[in-house]
Length: 359
Image (cartoon, rainbow, N blue to C red; front, side):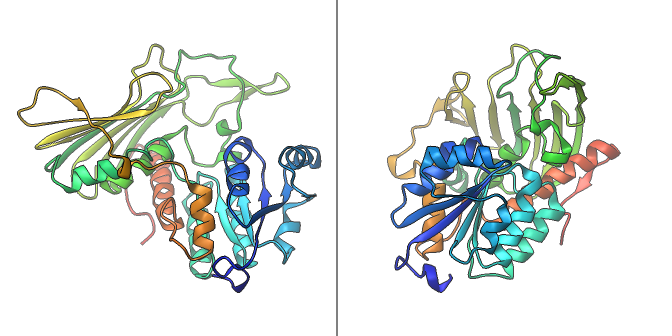
C-alpha cells in the first residue's frame, strides 16, 4: 500500500471517472459513507453532466478531462464508472500513476485489454485493483459454496442456467442502448458475464465453450430516430465443459415472451441445488434436494453466511491493508473476460473454443 494511505492515518481522496447510473446509485454514496474518505473530483462525458453529479453529491471539483485526475498527485484512488470502452485506458493510466483503482464491471472490452490491466496491476503490487462484482447471488454464495464442499451435490453432472431478466417479446422499436454497441461494450453480451462470474464462485471455470446466438431485433432507433443495425446477440445459447467436471448449458435472452423466471440449477450425483427467482425482479432464493427426498425445499441462509453489497467498504479496507480484495480481483475478472471472448470466437467460427486463452 502507498505510504499516504498507510492504514487509517490519512484521508483517502478519490476521483470519479464516469458518473453513470451505477456510480450515482452505489459507488459515490458508498464511498462517501466510508470514514476518512473524500470524493474530491468528478469527470464525465461532458462538463455539464459532471457538474450535475458534483452538485448532487457535493463533490468540490469538476474536471474537464479524466486525465486531470490521473495527473493530480493529491488524488489517491480512481473509481472508473465509464462504459467498458474506457475501462482499460483509465485503469491502466491510474495504476501507472500510482493510484488505486475500483473499476465498474464488465472488466474491459475483451480479454486482451483485461490481460493488460492485470499485468499492470501485478507490476504495481502496492496498489489495490478491484472490479465491481456480480451482485445477484452475494447473499447466497457462501452457503452454496459450503453445501458443494460438504458433498451435497456429489459429483457435478450438469448446470442449467436460464437467464431471462428483462425478457419480453421482441420489440423492434425498443431504443438503442450503449450495451448494443461493440464499439462501446466490446465482446460483452447481455448479462452473460455477470452470471458466469457467479457460477465460477461455486464450481470454477469452463474449459470449453460452444455458442450459438442471433439478433432477433435486427435494428433499433437511436436518440435521433435513425435505425442502427444490431451486432450483439439478444438471444444466446452456450454449452460448456467445466474444468472440474460436468457440463453447463447457459441460455441468455431478452426477446422471449412469457419467459420462465431466471434460474441456475446445479445437478449432481447425490443432490440438486437451485438458485432462482420466485417473482420477476425479486431476490434469488436457494433451494435443494438430495437423493431420496421429495423434490426441492427452500434452504434458509444462516445470518453469519448471508453476504451482501460491500464493494466500496471492501475497496477502502483493501487500500488501508485491513482485508484483501475478494469481490472481484483482476485475475478473477480476466477469467470471465476470457470466457466472454471464447463465446464470441465460437459464435463467429461455429467451433468449440478451449480455455484458458492465455497461459
